[in-house]
Length: 146
Image 1 (cartoon, rainbow, N blue to C red):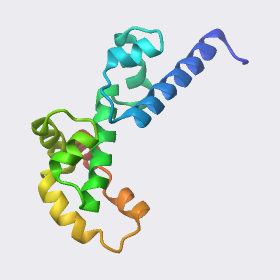
Image 2 (image 1 turned 90 degrees about the vertical axis):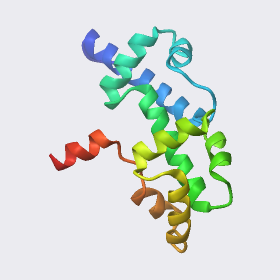
Image 3 (image 1 turned 120 degrees about the horizontal axis):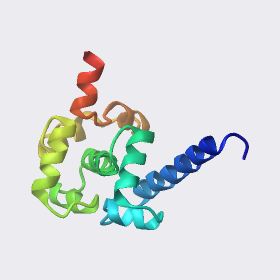
Image 4 (image 1 turned 45 degrees about the horizontal axis):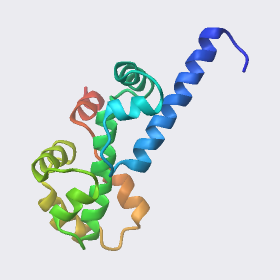
């Protein structure tokens, strides 16, 4: 690895954060928290949170919630599981928390989304449906319109 020691450290930190993000992507349905993720990388939870935010622009928790909601959206579009089944399948342990987070990110309750999207998504290729229905945090939406 060439470059200054600061550049080398920065690259190592980016590689570490990529491993954390990949773990969240793989294990989104498992019980995960910042302390557990940090332990896996031999760093403090505070340092992990700061570095993850610096590299990806959001906290590890926020990233995890977005991944869970994206997966929930896919399952709800399929229409073959109840909202409660989807809630637990994507890693939430509380239907109330799932509904609140889903509504925050998507703009409608999971049951409304399931009803409307399972009909609307019929005939749309999965890859296109996933792209056009990706959840956007309220902050991000405001930032684009500002």
